[in-house]
Amino acid sequence: MEPKQPPPSGEDPGKLKLLEVGQEITVPPKTRIVSQGEAPQAFYVIQSGKVKVFRETADGIRTELTELGMGDYFGEVALVTGKPRTASVETVEETRLIEISKEEFDQVLDHNPQLARHIIRQLASWLVDGDQRLESEVVHQVKLRQISWFDYVLMVGLSIVFAIVFNLYNDNQIPLFYHPGGKDAVGEITLSQALELYRKNEAVFVDARKNSFFEQRHIKDALSLPVIFFDLMYPMFEFMAAQKGGAKDKPVIVYGGTPSRRFDLELARLLNKKGYEKVMVLAGDYQAWQNTFPLGEKPAKAPAALPLGLAGFIEWLPLSIFVLMLVPPIRRSPYLSVICRVLLGWIFIQFALSKIMRPAVFALNVVDYGMMPAWGVNLWALVLPWAELVVGLFLVLGIRTRAAATLIGAMNIIFIVGLVNAIHHNLPINCGCVGEAGEPVNWWKVTKNAGMLLMAIQIFLYDRIFVLDRGGFVWRERRI
Image 1 (spheres, rainbow, N blue to C red):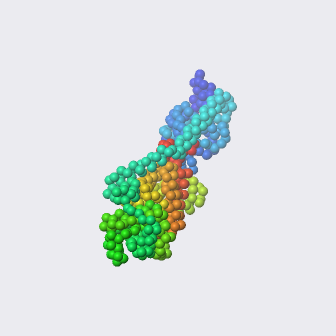
Image 2 (tube, helix red, strand yellow; image 1 turned 90 degrees about the horizontal axis):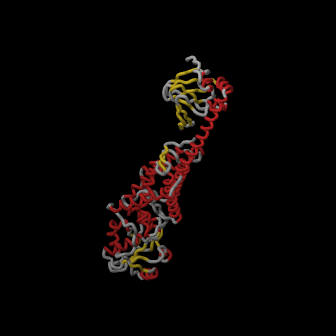
Image 3 (cartoon, rainbow, N blue to C red; image 1 turned 60 degrees about the horizontal axis):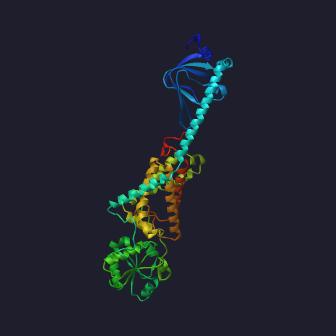
């Protein structure tokens, strides 16, 4: 401590009064002088050095307010209002201060109106600056939360471009649009004509669908030849057809059970290339044969579950997240959003990588659901896996996460609708999540996707840390 020297003549009266009171102290660097929330005890004037003023939340989020240097002062707000300290002050470097007690500060204000007016003006200035800073922060947060059509165009556009370019160089490439006609167009036969040939036993009927569909319901005495196993099962089919008296010049009628006619058309072409001259597909309503021909039926049997690997186990985590969302403070936590982003992104990336290399297999899985028109199957099978990959990466990296969460939510809704439709129609199919692998379609699968949908909604509403978005990069949410 050093005794105060009398002020030189001619100096400002307010400053004279301040210099006549208090005691001088020296504070080392990185030292807390006052702490937010503590009771006010003194007012400080900086003789030399620098200090920084900041606020800090209970969970450690720190907001730097300002930096003060020689000639500045602090601590007057709490002394004037009688409230606890509104901010903390810490030295940046070694700093000399004049520490004035509350009693001395009150005496100075009582005898020095000029100083009182200066402090009032300073407080008013800080209030205006705070309002402007608050407005700037609100504008920043609003921009951060905005979703533009550009966000969707960016992600969907990248998915389409990647899908088209990769398909050009993929050994397993497929055409963008499926054409049931063209130079290899297959003839059709009406339902009544086919029924007449069936009654006269003058044609061989072939079911092109997968075995699980055939076993569930088929035209009685028809042969099963799944187009996806054509090379493997054709020798057995040829033997069975010969047993039925089916020479290659005898009519062969191929039927399927999907609105895209993907299976029956492709099988008819393959049989035609094998020398069957009179191959036709059943025309009209794709399900009409079930109400016209005698049927062979068995109770529906769920296909065997094929392991999804680590992604299959991760899929159960959304159900745990759903339980956490029942607790309001956790439900609104931005840190939960980060967890949801990483989990959802990882799941979608894993599923996408398994389908990108073999789009034809995924296209047949799409056909199984019976909801996609023929022309859109290939395009959907090409673009959707890339959309899953792009959106998953955006979520994990924190890029435009609200738009990414919207797209993932939309994908989950589409998949939930497909699952419910498959359950309603008792379709014996796997989900087709990972190429040839997948779990049987059931209500557990619907529940998993509902959990992922809730995670996407949580991200949309509360994600705001580690985000690169329209307002710039945000490491943590700031509130001023």
